Structures are given as structure tokens and as C-alpha cells.
Length: 367
Image (cartoon, rainbow, N blue to C red; front, side):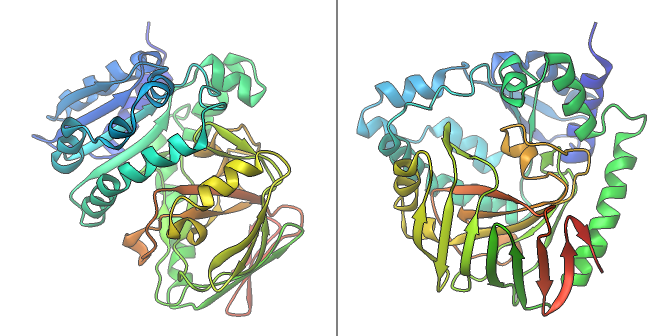
């Protein structure tokens, strides 16, 4: 018997997030643990007239690959992967890790070498997406490992996940449309604005958004979603920023991460734990020390940190920056092999001023 929430999850992914049309080639990427959702996604793709193609990866393959691959193999890009990214109409990625710490002891230099090799294909992928040629969505299927990271029982975690996605509601699409409408009001207000100044216990940062657009992230690419974001001008970041929560990237966990920016570039960085990994990522390429994203989380169904960036960056009452690659669709020009989100809680009195006007305070929009 299929959990009805899983069936609704599949329906939202296919019919709302990527909007499969007759004749579409649809890649469905996941690990064996996501099979129940994978099957339901396949059913919905067929009902919509699309052609599903499953890309199944063994659960611990990434670690095995990084352990055994030669330098030549680390830099090799599969022609199958290229074909999918360059020709398919839709991509649905289902994350369902059975071990979230599998890369924790992996040598950072091997991860950065692989990320550098993938940069070219990811740039082409983003370009197709920016041109409207590719529709994609990333989501999560609950596993015991994710529940343990979140500090919940498995049933509690399932309820948390499906509540954040609204698939426990009678009409999830209507709920996401309401999110879209409210966020669009904010995005419209931000049009034509120039400067952002973020102040709080963990941040004193100025950014320019002159000529940049904000994106209304309403569930069409991340499920769950709930954020508005842009890519600030690459030379504009000035000030200081500290992550309120551990920052996760490529299986590594960095605590007490602090950054200082001058002229848009990270000129000082430190961490209380795993500082060596932080420095390795900052030196991946020139773009890794610049900001690729500034965003505000709006999903009030996500109230707690669960050690999973797909959910954590959407926590209502938080903001985040991302080091590295920016979004060309909003005017971003920074290119890097990394895109690393770092979250700060604003519910403790944090404020955001836009062109001198109070836009946001302690988790509440003021316009």
C-alpha cells in the first residue's frame, strides 16, 4: 500500500514543479532507497504523456568513486550525463541518503578536483535552464539516516517532511500558489532597488543589488521551497557574516564559520571546526571567494534546523548567503565549481534595510 502522501508528492513534482508535457524526455535521478517515490513519479510522468528515464545510482557510489578514481577518472565526464543534461526536457532529482556522513573523512582535494571538472557541464546545464530549455526540481525522500540527523523518530520526520511540502494537505498546489502570491508581492517591491544592508547579532553586511532581479522560489525547483533570492553584484559585498548553524558541503560539516568581505571578496575566514575544509573550498577557484546568492527563507512550516540544506535554507525567519556560482537568470555573473549556502538566524532581532528602508525585522517582512 503506497502512502498517499508519497503519491501526492509525485503528483506535485510532475504536474506542478516541472509540468511535464506530452513527449517530454524526463530524467529521474535517485538511489534505491527512493524507489517508492520513483515508481510513483514514473506513473505520473506516463499519465502526463512524458517519457521517463531512470538514472539510478548506488547509495555509496560517490564515496567509492572518490576513493578509487585516478586523476584522469576524476576529470572524466560521462557522455551519458552530458546527453541527459543537454537534451532532456525535465530532470527530477530524488535525494534519499542512507548514510549522510559517507564523505565526512574524504580528502577535500579530491572533492575539489571533481567539482572543478564538473564545472563546465554544470555551466551548460545552468545556461539551458536560464534559456527556459530545461525544467528541473530537487526533492527529498525520507530515510532513517535523515531522521537521525534531524533528531526525530522516522514517523516524526516523515510528518515534518510532508508538512513542509504541503502534501499532507488536500490541495498542495493551491498551498504553493498562495506562497507564490505572497512572495511575488515582495519580489515586485524589490524591483529597481539598489542597496541591501543586513544587521544582526551574526551579521553586518552590505550588498549591491543594482540591476539584479529577485527570484520567487515557490516550489517549482526545490520541493520544499519558500525563499526569495538574488545574486548580488560580484564586487559589492562589504562586512562580516557568521553562520548561526553548522554549514554542510560535500559531506563535510563546518562549525562556527565566519567570513569578512572587502570589495566582494572573502579576505578573512575562520571556523571553530573543520577550518581546513573551509580554506580548501575557498581556494577551489577565483569565484569561490565571491557571493553567488543572497536569500531570505520564508517557509514557516520549517521551524527547526535538521542538518539538510534543502530544508534548512528555507527556514522561516532566516537568511543565507552562498559562496561561489551565481544565478545568471537573475543577472549573476560569478562562476565557480562550488555553491555553498551558509545560514544565519534573523529571529533574534536581525534586520534588513533596502535603500535605507526597513524591509525585514526579526523574521517578519515590514513592507
